[in-house]
Length: 318
Image 1 (cartoon, rainbow, N blue to C red):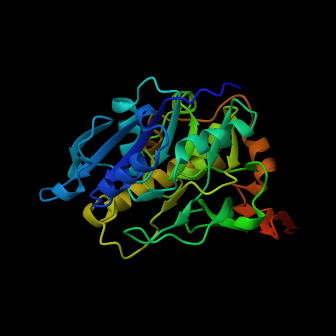
Image 2: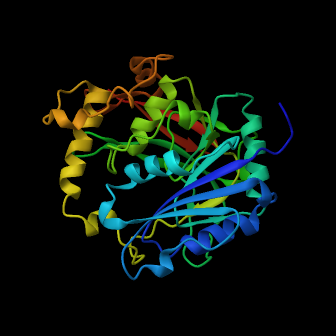
Image 3: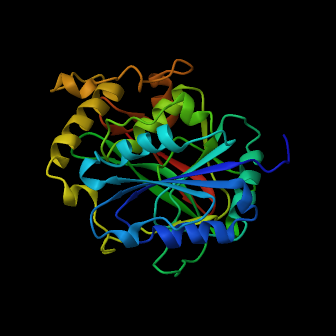
């Protein structure tokens, strides 16, 4: 594979988040080749949200829309890719509240090359940080099935490996996250973001769609970034501001269950453009379930994954 550092488009959907400036400044400051990075930000703001604007920088492009017109994070990411993505080689999708390790960009590309797979995607839940810059002890994380929620949607958890036991190469995974996803730009052109999803289900549907289009997932074997998972951030969420959030979530659930479990939707309007945002033909949904050890119709996790002493273990469930 080529050792030439690729160009990178960093995609950030920003909903009224004051952390956006610190996130972008940290990203660019810690990049080894910041001149090869272009940051695209879709900011959903209300009057008085001036502190939630992206910083002025020649490599940062920001579109600002009225938060009242937003239909949630998936809609925002879809709109972002449609309006700001360019001809960069790779995409890194992150959230607006992140921190980064030195030389994260060069190290991330090195990790991707270690996969020796042109259709590799690097993704996981990064470790958490506390603003402004309190970082945890380093460890390696890998996504695993968590549970099916009340709506029948699979949500994730993470296994953790002590940093001293980190693997020599990236680890195969069955899932991608939405807050740290590094992929060839082609991936999100072949599998465009579904604007009709709301919040829960964004990640599992994206995982299945990408995998059935032939993409493979890996957890990084080093620490490159951190995410603010704090619940008391003061940052408004979309559902805090929008009365129609419950309706949008309901339609999203219909869409997810139709796509993954073959369930007839309660509202046929929830399947708008579903063919455009459907599964791929390279691999089947059944094959994905077998690989991930889950059953969408039965809402069961067939195999529990966990990591102990740096090694992947499995527990088979009845």
